[in-house]
Image (cartoon, rainbow, N blue to C red; front, side, top):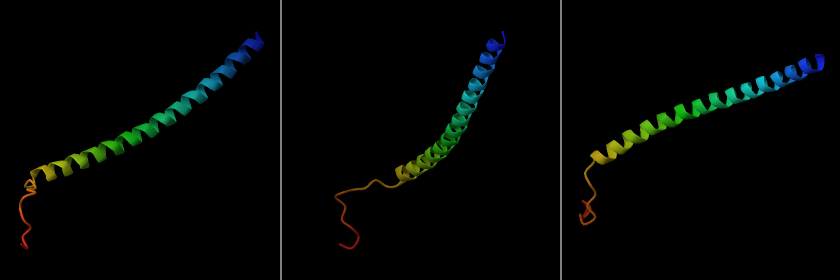
Length: 65
């Protein structure tokens, strides 16, 4: 019975370590997701700014001509 309890305790310790490791990964991924979302918002704003500009006409001569 004692050996069985020790085995269960050892397994519990390993499981707790695994949970802690996975939690650290989730926290890091959440941080990356927040950063990526912020970047996506900025890129979306830049894209809107670019789309509101006048379209480029390749046949139009530059002003110095």
